[in-house]
Image (cartoon, rainbow, N blue to C red; front, top):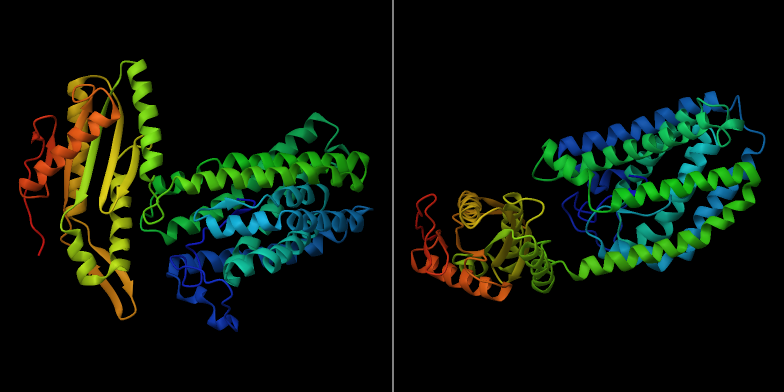
Length: 462
């Protein structure tokens, strides 16, 4: 999105690599982009060539009908973008170091204003100026490889070209003075967001393990980033309106609220980072307790039911002893992803430490429904983990870890406990009963009886 920047996992070793600050590669042929999977590389190159092509053809068309004050507008927008970056330099560097997911860099305030005030080619020049400065001052120092910066810039160039094409359908003198002009600005805002967001998210999804429509839509609606982007684009539209009606110098009035917004976003990001387990991306134990307790209180008020699952990987110590802790971390992340994939978006998933995970399933209508639902989810998770094969890149090639199993204990609210502490105690006891039953099994409730769903299939990995 306008500046929905690619996640850090798309780094020097490809989209699954980790950027190394201060490390650079010499020569385009040595860039790590060439080692990316072919579908990802094809999309990246197609987007970049399309951006160059539209910019070249647009320049020939736009130069014939330049607005009278275009040099002043172009310079003011580039300078304003540079000033806002410099004023929030520390914030942006911290965000790049701490954020493992796509995030908004807020420069679309100026790039969308350019799309509203200038022809597409000149608006693209504003993008290149602002993003060139961003790369020099923020991205390069944060270990962002050149190919990633080029792709992000190309997506924004295409976005401003699309937005400028929409605003160009209305006479520029009436763009901010008529209802028709307001409609054009709104359509341009949607075009900008759609082009940039879809291109970035498409590459993120292609680079991940799940390449389906559900995954695409899930990433597309990532957290509050889409809302933040539309708010930033709206600020860009207001800035463009003020500059058109009152003069380019009024862009300076956008700088103070934008700087404050930068700092507000950082606070939110740091709060989110503090609640996430670094190895798995799930909630850490403290954050899970807070959210689960809140969900149970809400269930109690509404007379709803809930299920709680405690999961423990069987013989995980053997994985660490045999392959090392780095491979073990990859396995934990893969299991976390498997658990997350088998529950609903509203269910609360966390890592309790070591190889233990916990899930709160919310929203059942009755005690029996809560138990049946918990058993069904637990058996799905158990089966998915038993069928996993984790391929971990290694200096000597790759390591494949399979024969993984998980023991799961469950409890239901309020049948097995009236509060979170009681539910955890019951589910934990049931999980140890599953271990004693031979592992790779599900046990439920106060007496740790067999789940009654799919018959447990004990299995001990070698």
